[in-house]
Amino acid sequence: MDWFGRAKISFTHHTSPLTLQQKDGTTTDLLKVCEQATPPCQLNPLLFNGHVQTMWTVVKEHGPQIYYRRKIFDSDHKLYAGTFTVDFVTEPHQDFEEKLPPRTAYFSEQDFANLPSDDSKPMLIVLHGLSGGSHEIYLRHAILPLVESGKWEICVVNSRGCANSAVTSGLFFNARATWDIRQVVKWARQKFPNRPLFGVGFSLGANILTNYVGEEGEGCLLKGAVAVGNPFNLDVTNRALRRTHLGRLYQQVMGTNMKKLVANHKETVLKYTNLDYDRIQNITYLNEFDREVQTVTWGYPTEDAYYRDASSCDAILGIRIPFMALSAADDPIAVEEAIPYQEIKQNPYTVLCLTSLGGHLSWFELGGGRWHTRPICNFLNKMAFDIDLDAIKPDACDKFDSQFRTHFDPVQRKLQIVDPNQ
Image (cartoon, rainbow, N blue to C red):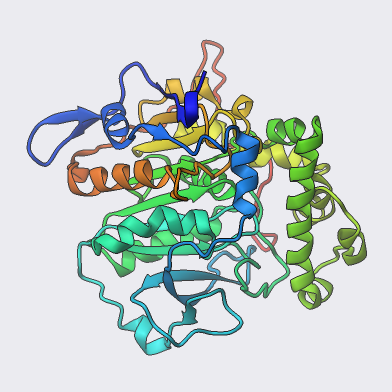
């Protein structure tokens, strides 16, 4: 029983968590770092369950004032062509662009080229949730302490078409489209060779980040990552949402948001794709949107096949950097039954922190604060400033061979991205 908003906290982990060397010469491990980063979870007792916590997010509040400058990147992927945008946290400024989210303006070419490149400040690369962007309140709450500290550089990768960004090739994002985050991480490694790089993803962005980190394995350029409110198994979450009236309401809200996103890019959709625009605008639920858009765009036979292929639950096994997952047991969207507990227990590089209360990306405290801010920032600060990152030597990813000479590849995908010209 959770009394007066006091949530229980549990940790799921390997029996021998990853050993970490601290800069003071002592040793610790990933579980201890996660435990030390996680304060008691005292939430607003009036928001007494996951549904109320989640629905409270519709209350219009301004949230923290974070300022951005935007850079448009040309995709370096031959088939996932087009452009995408990245918003970089900057000092306060007044030259806002009316067509961009609040407090956001474009970089000039000169200012972007002149970004300092030889400092060793840690850099955080953030992925937002479904149809969101750098302007989302849960995201700004999460990064505010890092911004205020002045010790971090932060950027947000906007999914294609989101946060008032253009869709220039007809290709939107999907739940397993890791190519843009991969490009940004590679660019940041080259541009800022002395900066340790970290990642944080929220909801669908957490699923993409988990897939990316798992795909990269021991070659991942990030030094640590946090996945917040990850749906993990999209097939399970879809079925869970569809079985209840409130679940279908969430599906309807998300489907409506995606319809609006397509409507904002109607001209591009009609010009570059064979999507049926009118059918898309007549859908009700998110799974119907995925049926009309994701299956047609990517060649999946059904939306269920897309969900199974794009899920990040197996990718957990491929992770070879310190990785913390933060979830709420009463999350009505990224449901607990989708959490890959056994996979997390198999991997010493991963730890799950589960709160009994919190809803979906909510964790509202008395006074309007958000609890998830503290474990995220505490973990990142601990990793960036206390842990000897160079001492982490990732093991090669196992293929889980059997006595019958079969093997299981945790990041094998059914959707193969093949260049037809090769």
